[in-house]
Length: 384
Length: 135
Ligand code: SF4
Ligand code: SF4
Image (cartoon, rainbow over all chains, first blue to last red; front, side, top):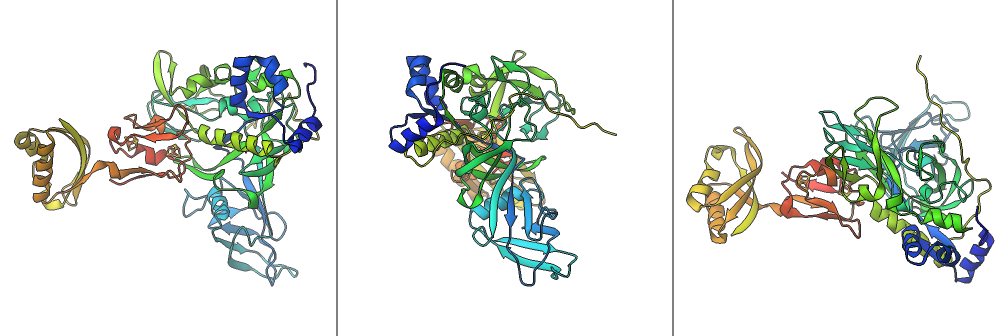
């Protein structure tokens, strides 16, 4: 670790005083390339990142408020999409990937988006009834404004890194990595590379319980490590090339916007939610500046063949984000056109919004209570 | 020399008329059929590219209309909603004719109708249903 340059308190004092120096990770890369790391680390107090990607492990905790007579909801549907009925009477969790039986292309993510747009959502719930909750059925409408509580809670967001996908089989396959054309007809990838939050603070020095982030257009928090957080993975130049760290996040749904939380449907796979997330990184020392400044040319992921129907799919090589973003990648002598599934334009918009909010004094950096575990792998599920 | 793309809609009674052959022989046009969906019972649609002198293309269109074919210029039939599109780029590598790309500076989606062959693949894969294809 290099000598300390500043603390969270120093940075927040400068934010409140209006003289903080905050840039996006893209801008920092340019500063470092032009004026060197030493100068940039001393000039810049904080760096912002962003990502806007489909993140399946997302959803909302809702509390509808009590009806009269009251009901203990067990079978719960919102616009026909099943929500969890195993919590207290009028609490539920609606997962982004839960789908309507009648309309499999419509799911929890669409209900979340409808709520954010201020639309009325149909609520159907039933119960076996108890002495204290006598009502058996309720059919009504709710809106985001009418509900008692609405909190976005995402058990896994912002994968540190994610493999690029191809399909070597002779038929088109439909996956959560989008439609993959036969015989490596295309390649898809899903992170924002040089703007990707956890790639820019690869040892999680600023990330843990309580870290304040940009989430869905509002201020949210990191509340735990995400599920499948597994920092002990294959690395290139000190940065993971697969999976790695993940975040569990939380924030007030009512403050969020459909510009940064958007329902998505991938044909043949199902429904998921585009989540916009940005992490501010305090430049506490030169090492943090060095990590935050790495451009797409120095960030890599592996290419994985999704036509292999197994957990551990073979890797066809390693590719840099600069190559992926160029529009085509050469694999074994063939030029394969690439598509991102994560919006780089939105990622940049998020990093810039966060930068501007910090510069204007609207967003203070929060030091986490504890930081995410920097090591550890993941367990698997055995059958039988 | 001009290049134009049209959607020709045929009522069922006239699917037998050799429209494209007449375009070539009578009006001296170069034709390229980009997409066809013709059923003798219900009529059909044809996406066609015509190349030739501008007035000949116009005369050919008038001839087809006189035969009972509805002729519409193509560009209106694939529309990307700027409001809905999130610029993810999922449609880009699916497009067989490089009509969709991300701008190298802004990373926003660029649609070049000239290159589009109205295959519909992009609309099928767009996760937010931002692309509408009428065909
Ligand atoms: S309709 Fe087909 S050719 Fe036209 S833009 Fe979409 S994918 Fe490309
Ligand atoms: S797939 Fe849809 S949302 Fe993504 S860039 Fe294409 S049109 Fe826009």
